[in-house]
Length: 221
Ligand code: ADP
Ligand code: AMP
Image 1: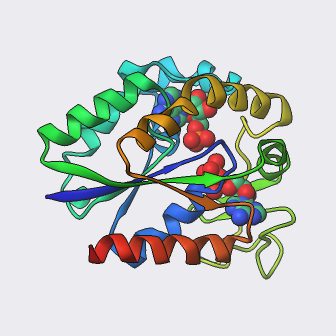
Image 2 (image 1 turned 90 degrees about the vertical axis):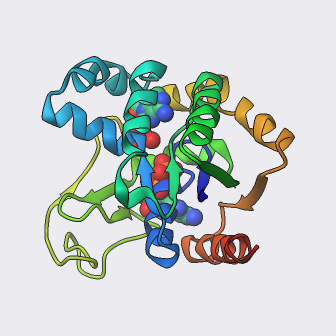
């Protein structure tokens, strides 16, 4: 049976940063619905056209669209060693659909990790976020700068980009969506006894160490 991991937490908690680091270490594949939706917007697919304005406003894309793209992705061969869900599920309906999907596909959620942060600090984290447009490595104006300004440590390219929705106003809307739609999932997974909290206000490397310790144990179990 394939076992999967889920990173839960508000926008800016570090889900993408940590998922990228962990995918190599454990053979998991990062499954970011935000990345998949941005790719759909760029490609101009039907799902992308429906998602574009909602994403720009910091709202939630409809459950049907998001569930369909995850369902399809989980049939890809490269996910057979397990995925790290990043940004999905975000609503109770998505969580229920995920349970059903995993059961049908012979997969299981081994662990849900809540990246525990102080919400008010997330506006600064997201406002300072930028990403290498070539390889996707994430950076931050103060907490994670490349060794040479504007040159990616990972691939050496100079193609840094900032997301259109990473502005203070949209971040606030995204935090409200998190509290209304997503935070109730903490209790949902607590009741299933698979939720663990990690202090994600700690420096990035310390969060990675805590996750590695946790997932190393999970992998051995
Ligand atoms: P999420 O995927 O949860 O929205 P990201 O992983 O993109 O969040 O992180 C948001 C921003 O905060 C990025 O610029 C990242 O470099 C930075 N960041 C991530 N984790 C930490 C941390 N533990 N301490 C300080 N900054 C962090
Ligand atoms: P993220 O990259 O996770 O910050 O997501 C960026 C945006 O994509 C969000 O603000 C939503 O508009 C949309 N999105 C990503 N994942 C989901 C999801 N699981 N459900 C609904 N909307 C999503």
